[in-house]
Length: 124
Image (cartoon, rainbow, N blue to C red; front, side):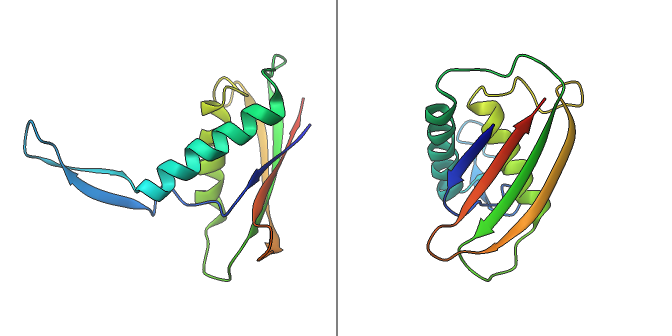
């Protein structure tokens, strides 16, 4: 099955901001608001495409192609982690551990200014 997430895939690891815990006064790292917005939109897009279905036959293989909308430096592995988190949050897969996902491949699809996206292929 093919799923798509429209928009530039952010890196969760590289898009952190420091906040202060009001109760303890200690600093902590949290995701930037733009990343949180992307996560919510990606989850909604995935849920609409999967229409309430869930993967039932584990383990599965996942292949991802990422098309970035700019020519800045990007890390595929960081983008993949963001996509895997979105698949779990949208409840398409239970978890992204080795019991559920036994193979992952990722590729750079290219530069697509007009239609940045991630194409995800699930295969059991």
